[in-house]
Length: 103
Image (cartoon, rainbow, N blue to C red; front, top):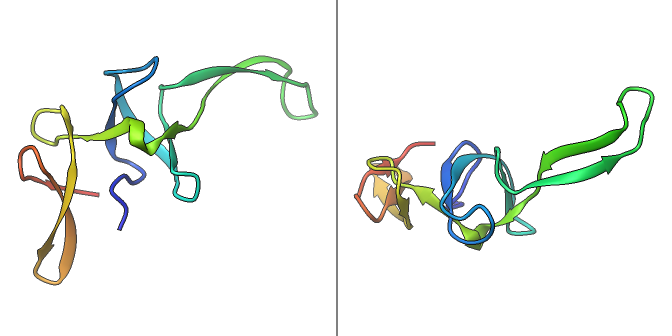
């Protein structure tokens, strides 16, 4: 089970977007990276094609998972993730508050 999944609210720990938070759009487990909405924006020079206009396009670049932390469901601050067995299910738990991270 992955600690960070698509749809999670995360906080950036290091880099140019340190302290900012956003929602995970895509996780790439083989590369240990994730794309977060509105964070790590880079400018790409796009060549014009039949269905897309050319020019400079802003888009989100992947961030390494070690630079992200789940936002605590209680107060929104960065927390580590633990696991707990609830009945038959394995669930993710915020270490900071002990609350279950739904997802």
